[in-house]
Image (cartoon, rainbow, N blue to C red; front, side, top):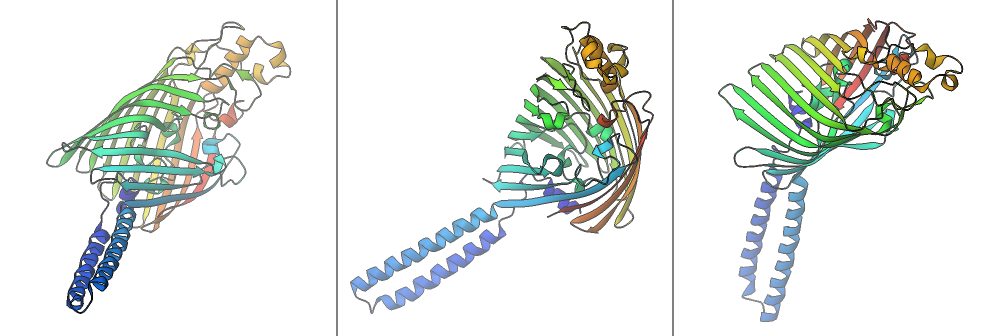
Length: 452
């Protein structure tokens, strides 16, 4: 399984050209044999016949060279893929991980292809294309970058890159490479953007039994309206950050810090027809801080992460013409323990998330949004503030238990039960629970994951 994960997390550095070498040897032997036979026969041919024979040999050599070049091009490309088929349902319609009371295959089912083209021994072109069922199988380019490693082991990559926020950012789309059925939503679903266009610099300092990697990056990103859930695109400008990972034997620790400027159009409140400026970002400063640690000795796996995301300058609605964009500041954390018993890996996870800026939002009631005639008779500021409380105040605790069964080196079956509660008079951060009708939710999910 580790071999497959290494292939999926491709950086192009291990592409091998053994076939190229073999065919080159065969080509050389063929040409030598042809030359020997020709030399023996040339003495009995006229000058014209000898010239024709030479031209024929040159044509054969040209064909062999073209075949060799084509073989080289094929050998320089590595293509891998991954697939996840999920099915799940919940005890209610709160919407945790996208599931409700109806059995659904759409929220987490996806397929992806990854390709690496070896330009030179130190330069690679790498791409990842993902199509998701929830987006009607519309292909989306998650990665598309050129990577070059210099003689001093500094790697520079430019193009569409993954934002390195989390411990499992490199395997974010590849569920096969993760111990759980899904990464904890309380951490991995807080920041909606996963990729950006820009450049990064990766440098690893090796020690006797340890490695210390640094990754600096800058660029721009965007989150389309179908992913924000607010009916408007969100642009992430001036993205810049640094992540570092220190690994020693079975231990790894990681830290990441990212800054960005947010801009967006005017959006809508999930679950309602209310047009609002609650997500109308205008040069809003955003920051992300993440800390993580893991222990993995091949049998026991313990991993934990803590994150803090903030958007400054959101403001409060004070009148019909003065209500600027809002987005919650969130602290999240989880700890997970798994143990590998041969092909079976059971796991348990505890996760929490809570908004830290509730006092910055007006203390208005959510009911004003849903009462008949509210949209026509209520001051926009009150409606905006009520919606603030309903959507952006978040608190929940989540407990997950499940197992992974490795069918073979390329395929794994997973099952997960997740219970989320402690909403504390909030929506719990679930778009299906804006009215706060549900105080908890229970979700059952199974998935088939494979790499190829």
